[in-house]
Amino acid sequence: MAYAAPLLGLVLPVLVRGLVEQPRALRLEQRSAPQVTESEQGPEIYGSWANAWDHATQAGAPEVPSSALTTQNKSANMRLPSQGKIRSCFDEYSCHKWRDDRGEPIEAHGAGFLKDPVGGRWYWYGESRKTKSLQSHGINCYSADSLAGPWRREGSVQVASGKEIKEGDADPYPQVMRQNMIKLTGRSGPYVVERPKVLYNAKTKKYVMWFHLDDEHYHYRRVGVATANAPEGPFTFVHAIRPDNIPSLDMSLWVDVDGKAYFVRSCNNTYTGISQLTDDYLDAKKFLSKGPRLEGMALFRLPNGTLYMLTSHQTGWKPNPLMLFRANGPDLSDPQWQDLGNPTRQSDSFNTQPTYVVPYTTKKNETYFVYMADNWIHAGPGQLLDASYVWLPIKFEGGNVFIDRLDAWDMEDPWKDTEDHNRPVFG
Ligand code: GAL
Image 1 (tube, helix red, strand yellow):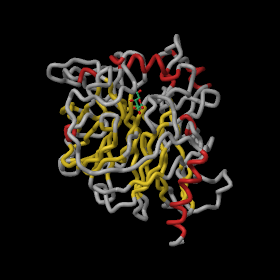
Image 2 (cartoon, helix red, strand yellow; image 1 turned 135 degrees about the horizontal axis):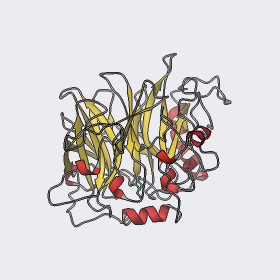
Image 3 (tube, rainbow, N blue to C red; image 1 turned 30 degrees about the horizontal axis):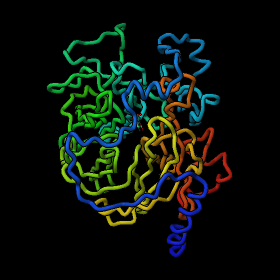
Image 4 (spheres, rainbow, N blue to C red; image 1 turned 45 degrees about the vertical axis):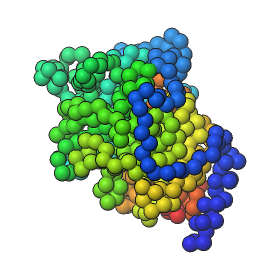
């Protein structure tokens, strides 16, 4: 086995490149944090939020508020992620809405997941429904006993002014981070609020949320930081920052097995930057390394110590070939990322873009990793309005990594219904 790994490392990228379109060669470079001034904007990828929306959606797509769904059509289209199996939403023909325990659609895109180390419950934080008006954009939170659901919508019942929202008011489960909670000197919203990730800080006993905070033209390029005393909030906005003085777009947080927390982001849409977080998780304290130009980055480390980063290219809401990188270096200050190609072997990656990779431990105490992704515009005729979810188990076979399209799979036994039914979780 020991001699197979280096060999596969050489062969796999060649094989995979032949199967998928790889827009450019990727290389890792030096580790110093380049200084970027406010005026030096990176490449324009999306234009404005409204353009991005128009570009992604068909004109006139109906916007049906979830409250308008009758009990009948709710149950006809009912699908909890926990209904026996995970049924991902690959395309609008096979897709069923994922619903919470009250039958309402789950709206939590660009998500981050947290297993609360205090209460033991799972929390799913994500972007609210992708309506055309930024004014309604915020962050929703759901919780469940198990990652497999059923998911209950959470929300702080306290508005910024301290006024209680009562049952029967517009939204009994308000967003845990709303537009009117973001207070910035000399600037007014509405803001782009994307890709929220929440960590628990054992030192301060706070739940700390980071999210991509931007203006409608994606020029502000900051991170919003908010904290709460409980995982479901209420969250209080702390500040908008530009970690290491570098404009920041797509972003994620990741905690390593030794408890050290990292911030990974697209620096000015030009390259990927990784920094360590301060001890209170309210800022970044040290720029560690520079990587290729990527988006939707999700880091994960196998029990054997191997570190991976699953990412997409930058094509806005449109799917593109995923890239899986393996760190060959000693640590994140010198990761020596090696591009292993696209583990889905499909140029559209089943219409997905990564948002997080989450370990799942079965009742038999086997741990494997779940690829959590957004299907932004191919989940329904409303495109962005119908944005939905794809969750798939990540399969390791020798030195190869695969993400297969599984129409329905059981989180307790991910490969049960496939030819791999007897395979070990890692092998
Ligand atoms: C994607 C990015 C999303 C969002 C979108 C806007 O590439 O991953 O989070 O920013 O672009 O077009």
